Length: 135
Image (cartoon, rainbow, N blue to C red; front, top):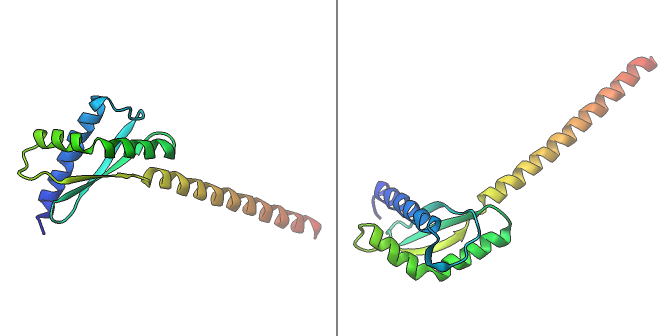
């Protein structure tokens, strides 16, 4: 098991350098616009870096970005190894980051519950008003 601070520093550096490569339009691969690396997590032995990919758009765009990045993994790993000073560069694994979509889904659910709650409260007040006026 490695030092957690070292793992965090390596993950942050990989994320930063990977973002630079993606922004520069690397390797002639057609990434969807607004593709970003939201997070990088290292395994305890620093042998693998899980890179979470997010794209502003549809789920298909995220899937396409992950597939393109997976295809370009040898190039990316080589380029990142040149840009960083690690003796042994970790293997890369690209994963679709669903946290943004999940957050949107949860927000919609909260909005639905809130609307239903307001409607129920309005109905309750209407019933109470009618009962007060009927007596």
